[in-house]
Length: 265
Image (cartoon, rainbow, N blue to C red; front, side, top):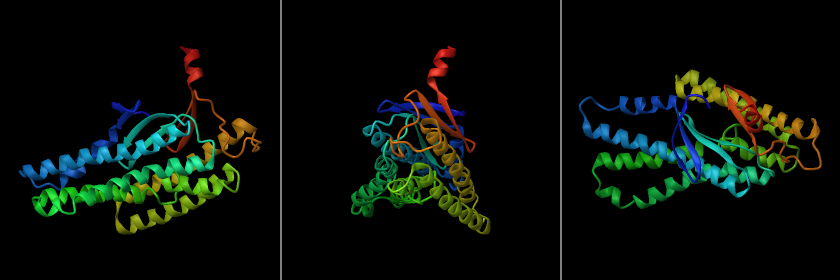
């Protein structure tokens, strides 16, 4: 993904920071009064914790995917969340459901655990520190619950597609999930315009165009392996090799073959 810079790796998975993440500290610090060192320090800590929470969320996806033989190319941190870019796709609907649900489960689990641990200590903390701890719990809970909205390409949309694919082929399951996701995106965008919520409008647009990319990936998956017809391998039979990478950027899906790059080099 262009404009993303590697900042480290965890469990053998590169972690990259997209340049647009620069707006996160801007929003975090814009609410801090000038000359307030305590407020500035808390905003800085919350920004770092937000990055860490997104990484934990995406690692939930990546490590669960690894259990099912699905490899992760890298994790890219974006203002609307993270993206764990997988190399090969899940072979079964149940695998996709588990992989998609793992991220929100990690976020909600962090919120529940930290919230429980803070029940008593928060009463003895300075008000600003207690508020910051509460904000950390809240942002993890929101990160988990919001991603469960059944709209592709969000986690909830992938869970929905996996459930649909238990009874039908992968492509038709994707198309149904895309229609539902786009309906939710349009409703969200209309509300965002009415409420003047720029961030919600941006997310709604991302979901709308991202859903189209998911449908193109599903189509490529079917045609690449079965010539457009579902074969005996089942709806989740992998059409791509382990040397292929699916990249979604700007609402377009593209398969990049490492083999081709190796041959050119």
